[in-house]
Image (cartoon, rainbow, N blue to C red):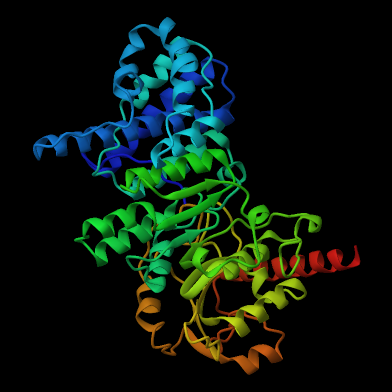
Length: 491
């Protein structure tokens, strides 16, 4: 999910090294100033945001001038990064300006969509540099970076995730979220097929990876948009909720970098804002998400949920079901426990199968989300058909190779099966890695949606040791989930 980026000029590898050096130097300067290492990411993030926004504004201004038009910048001259960041030779004046003038102005920028984004962001983050000298040094390093249109989004993701890993020590724990691999997002978007005119929603948008990929997909499908369509695309297509202020900042920045200025992104707790009865006009045609999992929510705060549960992942599934409009499609990543646990999970799975059309389950390999987590996950693909039809059978695909090794490094390897999955899902073609299970069989097994490939037999004698270890880990996780469920029932 996370994205901050840099251009590819001079070669991707050399540019990565330049970025790492700049970030390291900036962090060293903050360390000498006594800034808490866990505040490095926030400090750099808002500075990246302002610089990226300023560069995007400059590009639009140049394009307008080339066309003989006048472009009206959204920020006054004195508030633009390119203006005040030049004052690093006067560090004694820099800190009073940032804390005393820049920050109050950005918190009250205006009521349009861009102004509201600035208001939300700068009301929740702050400047952590304690001296003007330290701030000037960090600014000089940030000015070594370039957030222009040619920025490669993959490098953006790598830089931010690397920043979390190097600075915070444990990126997943620090961020509170697991980042979705870009190739997995693209596959999910291709199955969901968002179309121009539809509303796209991510209830835990993180750094907006799903929304950005949906936007790119829609642009590819409709490269030439009429003025009216472009207005709707910009301001009435992309929506999301996010709990964490820093992540909200990164997601907002990512959307701006991709030319989406009017996205309906809100900073709030999705589960606290949940409503079971959502009016049809407020629902969404496409929902794409990898919601946070492993969290807990007090049952006393779950009055708005049809099925109460101590696990946030099953609450998010209910939220997505409640917000999917007629004719809508959803693609949602869930941990393995959601697929087989009894109690609340089983009731929600039954509701999903009986009231929606759960057409496909993509079983992702254990280790797909390394280095953030080794938890096994699956993607649920379901629809809410206009004719009210529901599930008759579920097509499963067991993905054992996503094009990367299943180690901490996640290096690219041959044998990627995602293209095979994408070529087969629509016709529900059965093969070595795919099979179909009728609803009656699912019901007979307590609505268990675990992907058990009938075409593959466990050959423990010849299976690689690493596969055996991962198989044991999955089984241990299942035992742990069942014990947790039992403990919940007993309490």
